[in-house]
Amino acid sequence: MDDLDLLDELGKGAYGTVRKVRHTKTRVEMAMKEIRLELDDSKLNGIIMELDILHRASAPEIVEFYGAFFYESCVYYCMEFMDAGSLEDLYDGQCSVPEDVLARIVGCTVRGLRFLKDNLQIMHRDVKPTNIVLNRKGEVKLCDFGVSGQLEKSLAKTNIGCQSYMAPERIKGESQNLLGTYTVASDVWSLGLSIVETTMGTYPYPPETYSNVFAQLQAIVHGDPPQIPGDYYSSTARDFVAGCLEKVPAKRSTYKQMLEHPWLLQDKERGPDGVDMQGWIKVAIERREVRREKERSQVKIEGK
Image: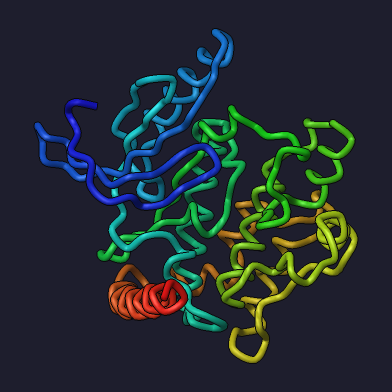
């Protein structure tokens, strides 16, 4: 901790805070995540093993991991700072992400998930817009994998009423205490739900729509899966998302099928410079700052 200058707070999660920090010796800016833990030896060893996996997770679609340390009953780990923020920070209402930009984001995410599965034999376990991060150069990367998986929460302890990206089979399995129901197919569902959220500009199962948490869970497990807006996005994009949100896990798209889907093949054909990622990110950041300024003004008015 003595080697770090603490800068801005980037966000708060279920386990602790994420801060922007600067390494004093190298001047490298990083994102440092705090996880508050009360660990016995077996859990501590599990965390250390998981951190070793993170250290080896080197791919263009995965945020770079710099290292971790323990301090006052917390584990801190430092990763690449993505200066545009998360996908959740950047979308702004319905259809705010053009289809070519969306396809590029999804393609990068799928390649990152496939790398974790094929090279490290691990699942992400927490795919959602806040864990898909971007920088001003237009790069898209996955973050927050592995460690959270070691701290798997039971359904009873999960804040399902706010946002849940769990696949139907995982909800059913955890409700029956069958934790083996989590597979790579569940990550695919979570990605599909994240795409829908990004296109709608809001979480597809908003708590205010349902009378209670159980009604929300019933909708995820038994209701029709949500869709992206058909009047703005192509039928090819809708078909891709439908493959992610198949209720039966065995029928859900695999990473190989997703990368060979016409929607992502079209993105590949555009080439590295065929999508103006930097331009879209610049505009999205400007919109975000305007939105946040309005929120700050509203807080001041309400405070008075």
